[in-house]
Length: 202
Image (cartoon, rainbow, N blue to C red; front, side, top):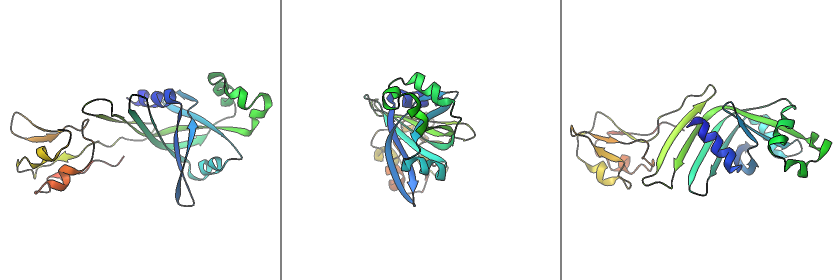
């Protein structure tokens, strides 16, 4: 799903990019210009505050959603890339020639998201389906709440889950199907035995 997650962001194209400025979050819509070799490329003009935040923080968080409610979010490390990438980006995004014709593209700098973690969450399916992925030098954490060995098989979590992600196996053990878990925490709050572990941090 790693490649698909990045490519879905490219298909959506205009997605939300979040950075930090003076300790406070900032957000704007930026176009995903290319996805190639598990890397995501975008650009911005040097005069924009976004450009300075990219240089200062060297990381971004990106999110987008398709019309059929497939949500994708990615966060990770970014770096500026050689200006020769501008020509390739303009070839794949010819409308950029209308915004920055000819030599006027010299105000733009290309950037690459080269390492990070991501997640697809299909809210259009029933129940919703979640999958996490990693690229570059990052590793993915497991999604979903998990039932641990302290479980007494009381069944309270089964009733507490709003989307029936808690299952009972053939041996009478309760488990949470990670890909279906919406991570609301209701099972965690209702468990009387502290037998449910929180998801890994995304």
